[in-house]
Image 1 (cartoon, rainbow over the protein chains, first blue to last red):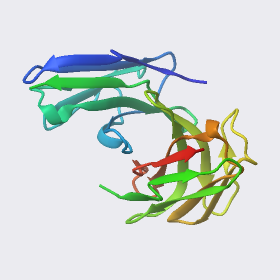
Image 2 (image 1 turned 120 degrees about the horizontal axis):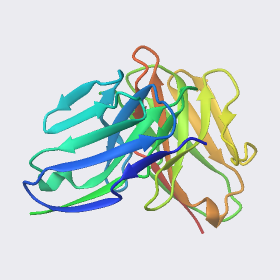
Image 3 (image 1 turned 30 degrees about the vertical axis):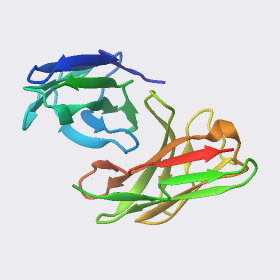
Amino acid sequence: GQQLNQSPQSMFIQEGEDVSMNCTSSSIFNTWLWYKQDPGEGPVLLIALYKAGELTSNGRLTAQFGITRKDSFLNISASIPSDVGIYFCAGHDQGGKLIFGQGTELSVKP
Amino acid sequence: GAVVSQHPSRVICKSGTSVKIECRSLDFQATTMFWYRQFPKQSLMLMATSNEGSKATYEQGVEKDKFLINHASLTLSTLTVTSAHPEDSSFYICSGRDTLTDTQYFGPGTRLTVL
């Protein structure tokens, strides 16, 4: 099946630093979504992207839908301790199924 | 954002028993609901797609007789793990797709432990 390659797998950063993570796919996706998952919880939607080239912000988060429709990135500026968690990219494939990346585990040191 | 609830949040059962997990969309109608399974330190894997009033569509490798899905109303889907075994222990997460906005919202998950 289709896969999303998400990197990096994990990040250890200092509070206040900026963070960047990305996802790539070998096939085209119609939407790109970024979720955050806290331990023992379900994923929570952070940003949804619907058009190629779209750049969207949500507070300190910024995400872009790649122009080729095969990639997306998520940036977090001025990280804070509560940003800790696992971030997943996800995309709707041509059949409408939501496919998830492997996740990026973010640790923030105060 | 829209809310999806799951019940129970945690369940421990003996091997061979069946467990039912409920997924409800609380403030929107979900014609389509999805069931995912997540093992520790791994991503969410789609198990099946359920459409209200019709049979669920299962992903390759997921046994439909083992994981029974019922989507009887626009706000409720259930997953029954039949004759559970320890290897079925996992975190099960449902999501509902808002019929009006097409956005998919996730429940808080159910931790199943089979002894």
